Amino acid sequence: MLKDERATTIHKDETVTSQERVLMILKVIAQFGRPASAGDLMKATGLAKSTLYRQLAILRRWGFVLETGNLYAPGPVSLQLALGFDGTTLLAQCAQEDMQWLSEQSQETVAISVAMQRQAICISMIEATQSLRCSFEKGRSVPLRAGATARCLLAHMPEQERNHALAQAFPQPEARDAVLRQLTAIRQQGYACSDSEVDAGIWGVSFPLLTRDRRLLGVLSLMAPSQRVAERQTALIALTAQSAERIHHRLKDF
Image (cartoon, rainbow, N blue to C red):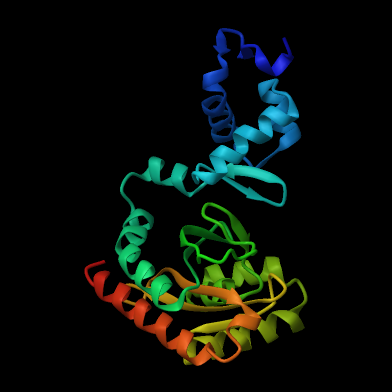
């Protein structure tokens, strides 16, 4: 029997069966105190690399684990468990009906993302019937740097948080100042658009989802292949704006 097919011991008095491995990995990640590499997790759990990656894929798919730069940390669902019924949960629930409407009207991929730990994290997604190869999937994060989703989040987050994120993403003052000018334009326009900034050949538009007092909750994004939206951009922006306004109305009591 192979090592990863036997019960694995991670503590002196803690023996883990094959059915419990996924929970063991989640516990190790939660207790690590910082994002952990696959090597860290292999050492802590004693699991073979192939077994570890299979379990991590399950945890990522369900949003319990977040992968960023080959490091693993608790994901948005783990955060929801920790905080209970929080704003992130309510945002996804409030947005679901209008996300579905937007996806059906546009026939494109629609997502809700939030800013967390200087990352844009997708918390809800409805995929188009035609597959879209992009960096976004539920529970996964991308840096707050490029693309409509990241720029829309940056444009509408509190100034101090935005400055910290930009200082990390753009160490050169000239580049940072250029991005700040772009973010000002996004706030004035009310939405952000991008084409091939994160994924080649992918166009996107993002609208902020705000509380009554203009506090950022997240952004609504529509993504599609650039070649498919060449003649539809104006219509897709209008549809996304309509959906964002409907979600905003549902969130009026936030």
